Length: 340
Ligand code: CTP
Image 1 (cartoon, helix red, strand yellow):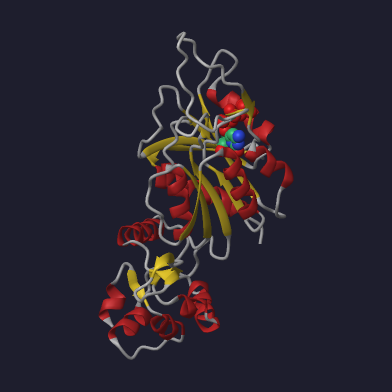
Image 2 (tube, protein in one colour):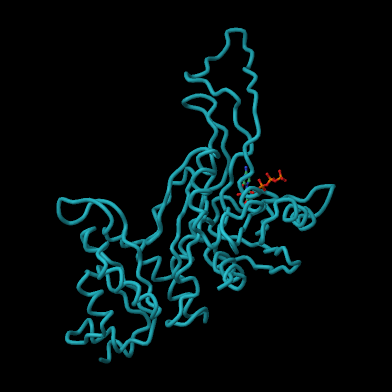
């Protein structure tokens, strides 16, 4: 009993279908369930079981009960299971479970939500991350410096707050965050397709990715050769669709929040914030997270600082800190604006 009472966080990994059922029904006839029933801290379950068990109506109901009570039940990963079968039900990587636990604990200590209420529980969010590539030929592409770290931090933070998260990741080499559905893409057209199809069921879409604005009109099927006369090929480009603008104007679901990012450097036409206000209006999104990237400071860095501009005219300055801290402030802003 004392173990549960004294705990700051209880993590059950792996959580079998049996443990989920026993926890949901409040059994307390062994040390584990006794600990769960006496704990007053956040509780994280990392389920691992055969796909059939995970998908069974009994497990679905038990998971829903535990989530309603404020526990974080991480979505299992897909892949090889303990037997010969593969599918959904795999335990996420331990490092990713650890990160999820750290997020939950940090959020709890920051006083966000209570163990009885994860503020994004029952919400579905879509986050895009990374930088798209537009191929000139099979080996060369136009790309950009986005690492995907901020988008991954957003996905992790939303999952820790109870959301069902789809992460559309362009050319990243980061591990899949625990409990997050990761869809991998390369080009802006693929990113658009995946974000738009996931957005149909989403309460919020955050475009943290850096989609390439242009693509070659006619990519070559074979590697472009150097010309003998030393001349360089002319590559004609065409503009890619603006996904953020499309999401903002079409609103694929009623009440959906659309969040954009703006990497700005001030110039002679205006300051970073002037340009960002104009971009917020042009894109039509609800929130715009503005980074001052003069000097390239943000790319690949573990830290970030930003100003979050809202379409209602308000703004929140987020001081320099981890990308996870910024992610949580962004979700705070989204959560307070989501309708019931
Ligand atoms: N974005 C998008 N689709 C694109 C390009 C950008 O959805 N083809 C999104 C990014 O994910 C980001 C936001 O738009 O959330 C800002 O991107 P940015 O490249 O800074 O905008 P610009 O292309 O500079 O906008 P404009 O050319 O209108 O100034």
